[in-house]
Length: 435
Picture 1: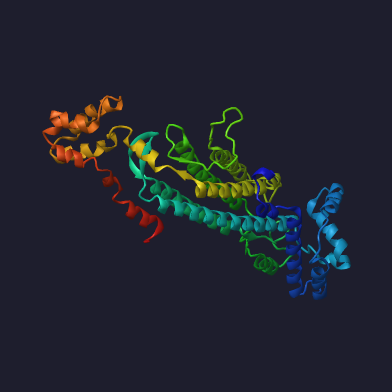
Picture 2: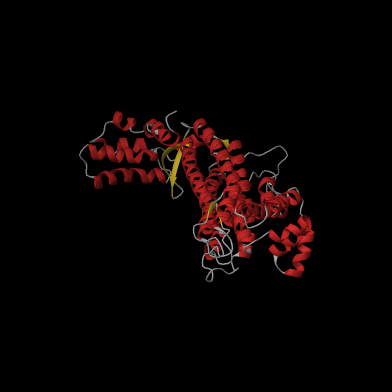
């Protein structure tokens, strides 16, 4: 997590002061519940809020204590006692460190999810706008990187919209799955703390009680969360890669916005490089790379070990901060994307009509020619055009096998670009609903 690829709102979630504030709230809410069921005095629970509720915790002081205790939660509790005084003996009653750590991580990941979902909403809005703007802007569709048949640039955007709508659903589900609370004690048996305390803390922190915790919340939840972030990152990369290809000099159907004063190369003043989408490709690799350690964290020893801890201290902030930045950057790219319909038309025309080959093939089969012979008739006229040796329609009209079945007028009708776009409205209705 470095400032270059970070945004303040997401970074703040992982700030030590935020973490310690969440730790305090978990402990204080637990004290409220303990007071309610008569385990500690209600006056003490109230005093804990009054004396530390508005405290600004001294991170350096906590670090100083931890250098001695070699235990982060004990260091925090020791510092907290400096605020609270005598009533601090009631803090952390029957709890274990993981009750605080895991519940806090759940809160942080839940808050991070809220930001990521809002990021996806902004990206969806940007994609939708460009989709309708270019709903009927024809361009060539490619398979294997080779010209295939016509599509529209709006359809490319509609595909991206549908994909990120799925991403949003996955993020919502991941948020729900990660948002659990464990206040169940040393090995999760509630031996020294009443389950009602967990229920109270969960309700106050916006979580659900973990049905069965050991000493930790099961890490399959975290594995699914970070795997979901990896999938979202992959969708970002897919769209980024599409834009990078469309910006290639030989294609130039769309291009990243190039601002006043921007430089593309230290050596070549003419360069306008797709640096933003290249950057997004790299960031996506990072986020995906954090999914595998999260999966390896699932298998802990018995009721717990801490092999997962160092991993999560890094991937929690890094994955969420990086994905937040990537989603915001992709939104900006789409909003400012320069589209060149004229170049799209030039590329459509580049192969001399070969993009209509399937229509001719199917028309011949409708006239009684076998599929094998139809394919042969069309291909023998297509290959010279592929080599730059003629016009496809002209060659078809001159082919005796073809002209015996299809008149010149029928052939010309088969080269109608609009034929390929007749169901664009149907696809848009499926993606965006009736509009």
